[in-house]
Length: 426
RNA sequence: GGAGAGGUGGCUGAGUGGUCUAAAGCGCUUGAUUGCUAAUCAGGUGUACGCCUAACAGCGUACCGAGGGUUCGAAUCCCUUCCUCUCCGCCA
Image 1 (cartoon, chains in turn red, cyan):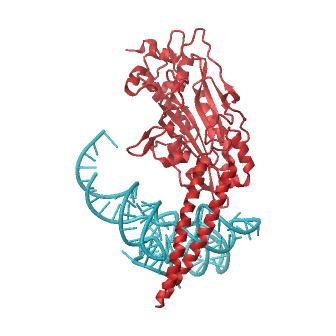
Image 2: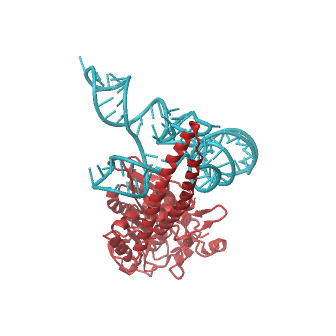
Image 3: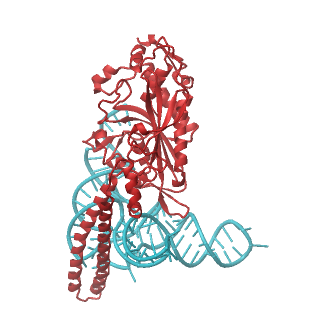
């Protein structure tokens, strides 16, 4: 959520920032609503002051044994005015808050302006495509031969969009989770968190999924809870309503499954493990002072890249343009892995600086140099998502005979296994 | 799931209708004093919003888990709800 005062002070900037995201926002209407809200507040508070003074006087009169009936009647009338105006105040405040909650963050000035993903610049590429003097297979074909996925059986349980890893596939998944968590906790300075997978409305409002994106989420109506679409939600909201007292920066990492309805994904690349309703992910979350957040975004992105570098995987980093950025973000880098079997780049991580947008919604603050509470900046990024990482390991690591080489850093987590062989299926 | 107890300022904890603009203690902080430390004394010590501003200055309003109600007036009475603790039951 943005600060209404920012809009008040710079309405033109606000219009321009939202326009760069393709939104035409009626800023004047918002400001008019804000004017009315403040006028009502001033009126209510004046009346409340009168009531306080008069009530106190009534108490004194009664104590002195004097007649207070007239005064009581007068205060009763004030009270009636207050309740009428107070209702109006509540309406004005909640209407303004709802409207602000529904508006996305401002893009940072360094973000390239563009309409859609075709305007996302590639800012660096790491490694190179493996030399494969054969026609590389897509992972869904490889998986079949390796006997490590059970798509059909998963679909029988839960429908399309669910995967089931078996044998070396399941172990690979577990190995990757351990490897990534170990890396982030021992070399990158993150604290590991094992957080709830079910959260309430308030948590989802804090990070920006609600109220606008309910259709992307799985909901449990009997308990009024939602399945998390990313660990960002529980990890960031761990510090909802908190004031940090000098312990910043705070860095959290955690592995969770993620649940997404993918309501708008019809027709997109959904074969194999490219896009699932449930997948595992290791997430990175940072709480930092505002002055440090853009430096922290570079660091965080580097931590996600380190995972891929240690695994020896070819990837690239792009900057999302204004039209392609997520709702709450001020600046986002996407990391994409090369999938030779599909001749495609697959997004495995999205690293964002939300500035104070989430912090204001979730009321996450710290004490600045003057001891005054101020909103922190929050960041997060996948470090990284499992399915597409496995896709890239399989497709980049495949050999002519269909076997797949396990990256060296993973072997200790795989009981020393060096390759997954085609004969693996029982 | 059943029975009971409880949620008050950074912490402990008083407060059952009108100087509560919340006692006291601890912590923190400023100053004084004693040659250092310590001790003692005096003062200060929350958050949000609004008004006014050069101001993180001043004035005001709200906030005693949350929401609603009664009342001239609510931390205090009533209702709803969330959470915590204890005991019992069930259970990985």
